[in-house]
Image (cartoon, rainbow, N blue to C red; front, side, top):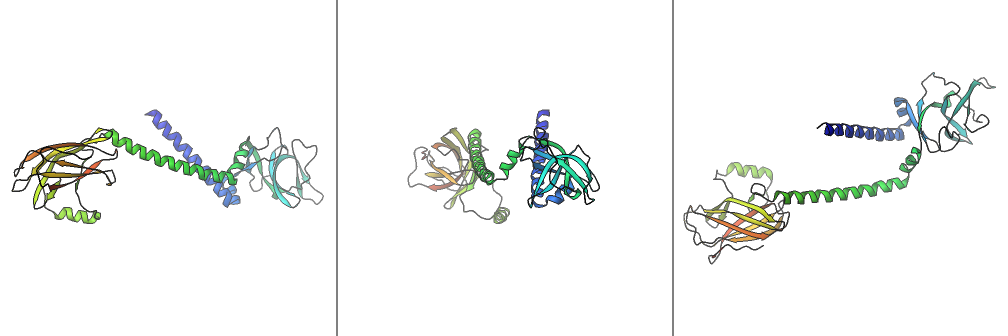
Length: 323
């Protein structure tokens, strides 16, 4: 129990982390500045070796955004914006010195770890993004792949494979459950008289309107009635089912040569097989009962049945079955 609870907690935490990561990525894509201001941190990928070995190439750097009025100190590693030939880029370098330039503005002098002089970029307070917190080596390669078109194609293919695999597992589980149940009485019950499908509301109306009857599925045969008692469908072998029970004559005249036409149905009510039982033993007297039993080859998905009773021209000498 404790292991199961711990596993549930870990799965929950992992799910929350994944949801947060996806939400953060989406928000940074749509509202980058607002999201960074709210969270207070941003991620950047290092694409050059200017800070090696301290920060290897393809590392992902976590930067804490500077607060309003906050001034970094020399010796810290900064993430800042720079103008390179008219193109705005983002760099992560050491802050070496803070002093006014020739115009009197406070300038932040930065330098790469492997450089022998300060950067040529003129960096001011409005160019600063934040201070370095930590880095994760090589995560940038994964990040670069995830935002590429190849990743999108791969996700679509993997999603389709997982969907097909899940559907196959569902079908296999259904088949195994039906086989494991062995279609014992009470598991595969009667589907009732053979009728056309009707809406659920009309079924309720008919159920309340019809008079109460004895237990057991009543099946009409011409002007006479018969009733099945203890009818059950059970699995004998993976490919064979047995249908057994008793037939009662609820009419006021003897019945001869009764034929039970059985439709085998799957869990969704679709027909997956048929069978017939000729009731042996001569005429069935009023209020009399007679046992029957027959076996047929059947689809593994057969889970229930529907029965129709009719008269045969000649009485049968024994029970017959057609698989």
